[in-house]
Image (cartoon, rainbow, N blue to C red):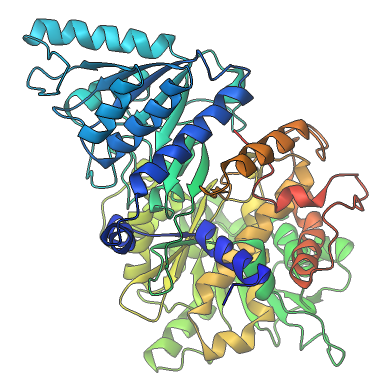
Length: 635
């Protein structure tokens, strides 16, 4: 039976927000290959279509464009060769630089028939119709000439490596990547990058950029940042995980029609529809208690503002009530802005702990002024969590969010109903307290590895902050559940933003207290949903379109013109629906908290089908659809 439009949309959403390991991708490909489906030719046609669009959008004529293909010996090289043959057949000036000792024969034949030129860099290359360098000196000269060709090109197609590569690039590919891209670390450029205005060649990566670790999402050595990555069949973890996802550019996913229903994704990305399903809609028989109560032990005699910001976020997060526990002066500050706040302990459905509370070292340095009782109360709540776990009564106490000053008060072991929200430096300190030897830079270089390790060591749900935030939690199996969300602007890296995030997580947990008691594996989803809302609120507050990560554009190889038309349409709308241009404007943490109700309303309305995506109803005149439509930006 033909799938309904809703079923097709759901399948596309799953495709765009789920990533699978290299081994899983091979298992998805095999049935198609066994049936004789020409996946390589389909991939090549899709690549050629996207290359045409890239050149056109950059103001270049595809016919006559100077294109250099960096081609390895594997299937990705074959994809690139067939695509380059198509481009050459339509008038492009194509040079293939063979980075290995062989090339895919069918693709090479097609390229040569279309008039393409091939040059080899490896003295031991055996490529029909192509003379290999005679020795090291000639090989060095050929490498220099290839680099110059690349620098003068309009478009570089990077097809050096495939999903089978493990670790850093080596040999000729490493040398090319070091010269044309980066030797390590991230490019030093603004969060909003406009390739069309750059003075270097455009880069189109085949499947993934060369030099990234496919399954771990790291940058283990030299790599070539892409402006656009065309990935085949399904998303790979590196396209969603930091830091690799930051160098993939705009991702285009070619839909081969894979059946992923039997596979559990390696990584999942929170999205508007799933987030909406985790927000509790108000009911006719609700009271302030049934909607959820958040308790906050945040702020301190030393840091007042964090108490206010976390409280503002929690109060704006779709709950019925908040309770604040802390110093009198902070409580007074909160009551001035949130007079509905109840001071003191009582019934709560979740706890938010530690935001704005000094660490042990900072408290000791402050002397008597820092002795406000916050750390003692936090330690008591956390120890009760650990006691519940020991007694196999994990649902006896409310779930907890532990941030900042609570992280050095953790018991040795917690359960998934405690969320830890460190940044990279705090994560390193947490890991070191459990016997690891790591610093913040290492955490940033291998965030997935260390987030999973922290989850294993503590038993807690881990949220590692970043432009792409990682959430690792209990999946009810022997493997962790890994989720990402990058739906916020870089402007969120501002003082107090983490306090707002903690309050938002507390609100999501409080309104789902009942479901959490029944199923603690919901903690990862709820934590990621809160981070998604935090990012969306940041986007609304900044008025721009810049985000840490965007869902891929889906390319239907049966309808290539639909993709070209979609990109052209959105390019004509460039700038429409933004307050301060694509990059947006600076924001303060309080503005993010203020934007939370609207973010929640947009998400819930979209899920109910009541939001008119073309109706500019927002008071600032922006188009709400920009925050959801994954085709709203090109590259």
